Length: 477
Image (cartoon, rainbow, N blue to C red):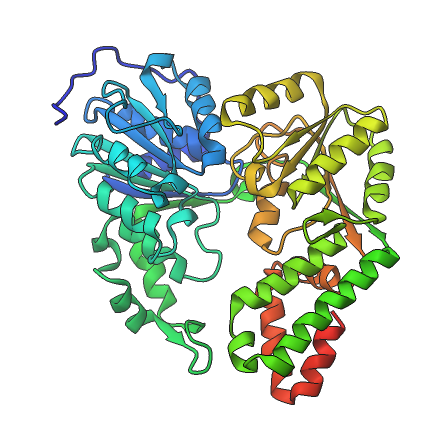
């Protein structure tokens, strides 16, 4: 049982707030709950730290949930902006156990994904939370799914905390339905619903053909007005003067080996869909569609069945990299195998390159990034690990070896370099293979849409014209 503590050594902030951060603190400080819906690069972390600083005599600790890939970044931000010493922080890792968690720290940084795994991390965190706790959920779209185990666990354990705060630059990625769980975490009183089903009855209209598909949102303005007093929202355009973005596209053809694999993947899917499988069930299964699209794009990136195959994309990258004059460059890859392949190719060309993906142990990640910032070269990272939270403004040239399906993830990756602290125009070089799936991805992103949702909508329309048209559409991808 944790007893009430008294802050013996008050810590201070060592960096100043920008005007919009002052506005955010002024708005949210009087309330026990709130959301910082601040676009990437506008200083959400610094604002959250300020709210904790002003409340430090009312709380004993802060539990800061964030994506695992951001734990080191959050720790770095706390060190950067405060006088807090090492013994004021504890970062959860795979060795953390209920009996080993120190009970006298002010900051606890927890990977939010661990709340979905077993009970070790859950009970280790739960014992720390009481009425004198502040809970922060960073990148709060990680708890947008009301049905997810981590959403239920984080919400349940945080109910005792005096203060609760969510941080995100993209509170809505698929519609206002994303707001329900985030607001429920803060307080059920905000929207006035104690269950998702009550919320859904009043605000969501579902498809009668495709189970679980939302076709219309009702009373959206009412939802926005309900949450308005509890959130502070700002975009980079409103509060920062940033340099331009310059976009360049480069294309290559599929190799003969890729062409064969690409056509075979489509044919396999069509055969299963139209010959052996239940057509409606398969088409309405988002997982099946996603697997097809992912398989096609992985082939376009030179990967088939987990193995590398001959392709021109790597040569396209080498040519782009050799023409770059910037001392620091970020390369975003979608697949781990491509990361290793890219690093080896660049090093063979006599260029300095390091890989940054899930294979890099957590304890080594910050050192790797610091070394890149000092020495320069090419940082080759996966969007899954590096696109959230990192400050990569040392680079003003970014190469996308492959773009992802989600518009929000692409913007997240872009804005690692295009944020406060960047004083040069940022050039984005996107590499594309000349094939249907990448053409669809590019067009969807240009319209600020998610490629997967766009493709599913197209399939829904085409299948109404019959099997022949559907077969024709899929084979033309």
